Amino acid sequence: MSIRLDGASDEAITDINITPFVDIILVVLIIFMVTATYIVSPSIKVNLPDAATGDEGQESSLGLTLLADGTLFLNGEEITETRLVEFIRSEKARDQDVVCLIAADRDTRHGSVVHLLDVVRQEGVARFAINIEPVEPPPAVGR
Image (cartoon, rainbow, N blue to C red; front, side):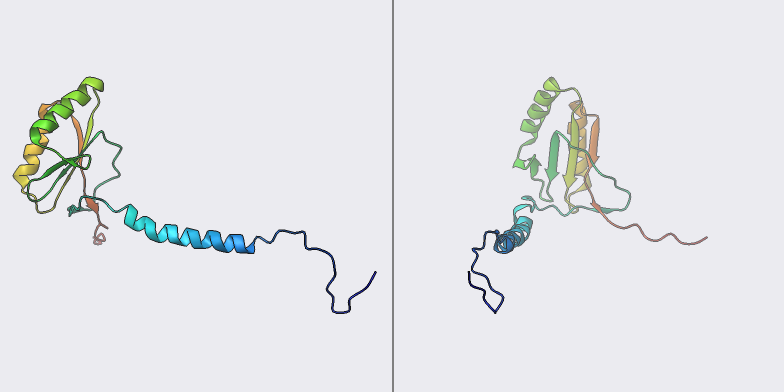
């Protein structure tokens, strides 16, 4: 049996070194975090109006998006008003409690939004919400 003076031994290293594994996982995590912002971006760009009094919405069965040029989308797919009415009727046949979330572009004519609300309500959808871009309310002025 020999003894080395420099402190090293002749024994085999049997412990697993996880430092390289942790380094690889951290690199993968950073790549995931950077690319996730591009994956999650919405497919339909809507310039929502600002409001300070909006609250968190709930999961809806109808997600309507109305662009400034009058283009209508249902759950991310372009749709006509006739097809929208058919879809609402089929949803109402399956579930009486249909909720509608309307996201209208800031530059959309007010009459177009009111017309869309009227179409939805005529088909018996009583619960709906209008999507907004939340902003901080102005500070209260002391009295």
